[in-house]
Image (cartoon, rainbow, N blue to C red; front, side):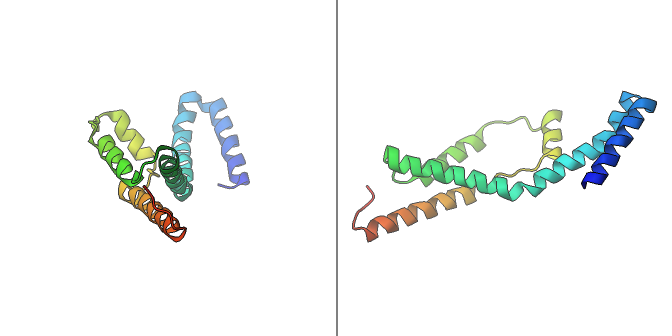
Length: 135
């Protein structure tokens, strides 16, 4: 929706609020708001997924450099398995509405672990070229 469309939408909502009441205005505005929120989430899905992957890689680097963990991909895989094993109430109305209205921007667990494994390989390759070994 461009600026002119947004302006017209706001004017229509104010007029309907004045003449039809708050409930009718809310009923008229809700579909537009839901579509706008869902559309913006879809637009930023790739960027948010990249941000999630960068956070995983930063955590993996911290595990390697600060804590001496050799295989952070194993730690991540174990963590993801543990989180997925938690029982969740997928029958609740709140869960269903949230899943309907929001977009899941998290990369799959396999993609996240694979990115960390690639980081491990690049660090190991760099250490081998320098004559060092990862302990």
